[in-house]
Image (cartoon, rainbow, N blue to C red; front, top):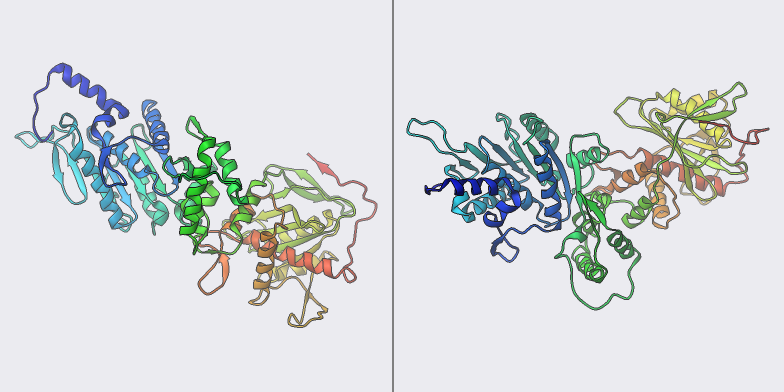
Length: 566
C-alpha cells in the first residue's frame, strides 16, 4: 500500500482470504464508470459473469486460460477481463500483464480503467505503486538496499500498431482488445503467445466484435470453433444483455427476420454451465430495441448483424458490400447439415459407384435417381495444397438443389477431370460445365479425351435475342459473363430458389463482397470457389432448362440401382 497500515495477524489472514476470491475482492475494490458517467461498484451482468466464472474455474483447477470472445457492442466484456487482470496482478507477485488495444484512444481508455480500479479500491487492498506512467502501472516496493520486497508486478498497455509490444518480456496475462480491427493480428498475437508459457496461472484473452471474415480474428474464431486451436470460444448474442430493451405496447406481428430472433431467444443459449433464455414478457422489449437499431443502421443494414449479432455467423457478415441477401443466407444456414463423404470409382464397365470414406472430399446429400437430370458447375484451381480449391457443384435440375459437392486443393487439373468424368456418369451423365479460364482448358480437353459426351457449349451473341450454340466447350468467365452469373445467383438466393445444405457454401456466400468499383470477389483472406462453381452450375441449369431440344442427356443403360459401398 502507498500508505503503510499496521495490521494484526488475523486481519492479514482475512485480507489474504478475500484476495483469493475474485467475487469477494470485487465487492469492495472494483469500481467502474457507468454509461451515465457515474463511478459505481462493478456488478457483473450475465455475459460478464459467464466469462468470470469460467476463468475462476480454470484457475482453481490449475489450467492455462486461453479464451476468444465474440460479442455484440457495449456488453462490458473488456471491463470484466480488465477486472480479472487487475485483481490477479495486484494480489500475486511477479506478474506481468500486457493489454493491447486496436488504437491509441482505446488503449488509453483501458489504462484509465485500471487507474480507476486502483484509485477506488479499499486502502487495505491497494498495493504500493513503484511507477505510474501514461501506459504502465507498476506495483512494487524496495528495501533500503534496493531489493524488491513488494509485488513486483506490472500492467502494461499498448496499441496493436506497436508490433514489438511485449516481445522482450515473459508475460503471464494478455488481453487483446478488438482484435478484429488489428492490421497485424496474426503477427502480433503469434509473437505475444510465444511470450506466455502454456502453464497454470497464465491467461490470454482475444476479444472483439466482428469485422468481416477475412481478418485474423475471424480465422482464429473459426479454427477455435472447430477445435483446431488452444482457445475456447465464448459467443455473447446481443439479446442476453439486460439493458437492450425498450418498453412499449405488445407487438402484434413479427417480421420473418424478427421471428427468427424470437425463436433464438426462446430457445436460449448455453454459455459455460448456464443456459440463458429470454423471459416471454421481455421478448417484445428486445424486438423494439432491435427495431430502433435497424433505423440507426438504415444506410448500412448489414452492420446491424455485425454490431448486434444473434448468432456467430451473423456477426461475421462481410465488412464490404455483401453481394448476396443476408437474411436469405441466414435462413439457408439453419438448413445446413453434415453429409457423408465418399470416394468415387468405376468398374470394368465404367459404371461409377461410390464408397463411403470419412477422409474423402466428395460430399453427397442425395444419391442420383433414375429419370432425374443434373448439371455440374466446376471451378478449376491449380491443385496446390493450401491454395485455391477445385470445386464441382452437382445440382438437381428439377429443384435447383445441390445434391453433391467435391471440394479439393489436392488434385491437378487432369486428375480433377477424371473425377468429373466419374461424377458426371454417376449422376446420369450430368451436363458438365468446367470454367475454362487458366487451368480449366486442360480439364475440358481431358474430358473430351475420356469421351464424356455431355459438356456445356458456350453461346455467342449475348446481346442478341436469339442465340445459337457453338462448338466452344466450357464456361468462360469474362467481365460480361461473371456479373450475369453472379446476379443470377444473387436473385436465386434472394428468392429462396437455391437449396444448399453445405455450411462451406454459406460461409463463402456471406463473405462474397462488391468493392468500391463494383467488382465482386471473396473478401480478403477468404475463398469463393464454391460460389463460382454454383454460379456456373446455375447458368448450366438455365441453359439446359431452356434448350431442351438441343440438350441430349445420355443416361447409362442397364442400370437399375446405383451401387453404394460403405
